[in-house]
Each structure stands twice: as C-alpha cells, then as structure tokens.
Image 1 (cartoon, rainbow, N blue to C red):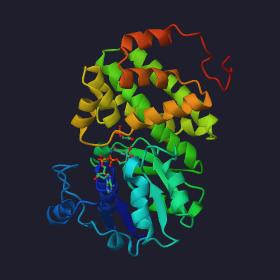
Image 2: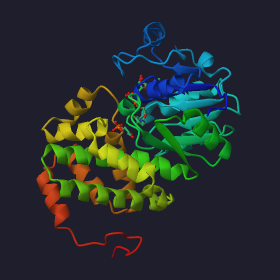
Image 3: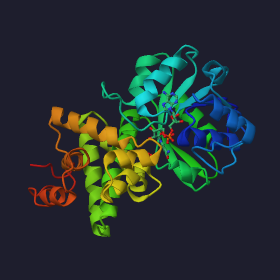
Image 4: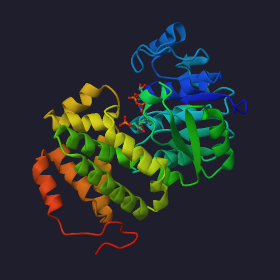
Length: 340
Ligand SMILES: NC(=O)C1=CN([C@@H]2O[C@H](COP(=O)(O)OP(=O)(O)OC[C@H]3O[C@@H](n4cnc5c(N)ncnc54)[C@H](O)[C@@H]3O)[C@@H](O)[C@H]2O)C=CC1
Ligand SMILES: O=C(CO)COP(=O)(O)O
C-alpha cells in the first residue's frame, strides 16, 4: 500500500504523534520533529509520549528528534502538525533545509492572526516551489491511536501529492479520500471548531437533542455561507472535511473545542477553560478572527456573533439564544431559496 516514501512529521503534540504512529505502525520509518529535546529522548528511549499520549506504546520505527535538519534529510513527505499560531515560524525553520521536490502537507485547523491566512496559504507563500496539500476530516487523535475506524481528506491541486498521501496513510482503520478544493477542505476543518465550542456549551446547559441537531445544521449553513463568500466550493461541506468533521467535533467530549465550550457552560472563565485543557483549542482564536472578517465583509453569521458575545463579553447564553430564536424568519437551504 505504500510506495516506499520516507516521511517526517513536524510537531510532537497529540496529532503529530498520532500521524507518526499510524505510519510507523505500518512498518515505515518516520522522523518525528519536536522542539523539546527531552521529550524526543523520552520517545526514543521509552517509546512513549507521556505528555500527549500517556500509557501508549508507540511504533518502534519512529525516530524522534529536535534537530530540524536531521528530521528533513532524505524524506519525501512532510506532515506539519503545529498549532496555527506557530505554523509560519516552524515553516521558516524548515525552509532552510527543504528541497523543492519534497511534499509538504498541513494537518493544522486554524487561521493566522494578522493575515487571515489558512495554512495552505502560508505554505504557498513560504515554499512556492514545493508541492503542497492539506489533510482534514473527522480525526480525533485519541480515537485514531486506538485504531477506531475513520477517514480523512487529502486536498491538493497536485495528483502526485494526493496519491502519495493516500499511499502512505491508508490502512485498515484509516481511509483517505481525495479532493482538489484545498481552501474548502481547510476552511471546513477550521470553522467547525467554533461550532464545537457552541455545542459543548449547549450540552453543559442541558439542551435537548432537537436543539443540538438544529445547532449543527445551522452551523453548517453558516460555515458554507462564509466559505462561499471567500471563494470556496460549498459542495466540499457535504464531505468528510465539512459535515463529517462538524459532527464529530460537535458531539465528542474528546474534542478540545467542545470541552472549552462545556467548561464555559459549567461557569468556568475562558482562561480557566483553556488552561485546564493543556492542549490547543484553535476555535477560540478562530472565533475572534472569523467574527472580525464577517463584520468586515458583511457576512451574516448570527451563531458566530452570538458565541462571540458569550465567550468574550460574558453575555448570558439564554439571552443570546432567545434573540436568535426570535430573529426574522429565514430560508433553510439558501442555495435553493436565497435569503431575503
Ligand atoms: N488532536 C486532534 O485530534 C487533531 C488536531 N488537529 C490539528 O492539529 C494541530 C495541532 O494540534 P495538536 O497536535 O492536537 O495540539 P497539541 O496541543 O496536542 O500539540 C501541539 C504541539 O505543537 C507544539 N508547538 C507549539 N508551538 C511550537 C513551536 N513554535 N515550535 C515547535 N513546536 C511547537 C507543542 O509543543 C505541541 O507538541 C491543530 O491545528 C489541531 O486543530 C487536527 C486533527 C485532529
Ligand atoms: O479536529 C479534530 C477532530 O477532527 C480535533 O478537534 P479538537 O481540536 O477540538 O480536539
């Protein structure tokens, strides 16, 4: 199933470790780069990443390293699993050692603060000669490491990239579907984090199943409205990187974004909710940047606006929810019946 490609993964957090482990479990050699030398030594010596996957024995073919040059030497594909806030700076470190034929794939689901760039746009800016792609789908790290069945999407304009990533990741518990809509796939994975916070909040407040279903479906409507305004293909939102990832992240307490929402619903402050996680929840910053962008472009996003008031301005959820429910009646699927 593989084509003998050699792989590096940048980022030794939950997802980077899990992607490296998936490839390693297939018997392929994989370099796992992380900034923390001690953690790299721990993985090499004990086979465990005790901070992010405690108690899990990782594949023996993983070589962890904090040396970027060594990590990138002689590899064909590089997966980048670094939070969006540090993504550009890590790519800048890697750039010095990269050759133009090395494939670079982002697995990050976030937006850069000052530029509103998605990670594929950062890759295109920083590495104009390298073939690039993005990987996104319903992929909770902690389920993948247990080999629970799932699938994902590799999006790239390059057929070579799509095929190489399908070959290297495909196995009995992980299917890889292909797309050419990099921007749409990436936006799906990024935007759903916002609505996962809203879902966690509504779960903590004891809202019913009808409410959860309405929230997810209207989230999908809002995400695709935003994406279309930014030039993405709305059909992508019908796939695994759209509705697929939205469902899992809005339903599972394994999602860090859902957990932030749940903690807020239990009355914790935003700082407490984020600090108690100890891992990245991209949705908090994404909410801020998307609210600003929607205001700037005049895109109607009542859920984003309402959640922003709750998360950043302490508005009571009951009041925000009441306002949304009593809002002007609207169209269900606006690609069929446009909104007034
Ligand atoms: N955990 C999951 O289930 C999934 C996560 N993702 C995405 O993957 C990205 C990374 O998430 P996780 O690995 O889960 O986060 P995490 O919080 O588990 O780990 C983040 C890792 O990035 C490292 N890091 C942060 N800044 C760095 C820098 N400047 N230089 C080097 N390393 C740095 C941290 O040391 C840590 O090892 C996020 O955008 C997330 O949305 C995507 C799919 C699933
Ligand atoms: O993107 C994810 C699952 O597909 C992980 O979501 P969280 O970042 O909310 O844990």
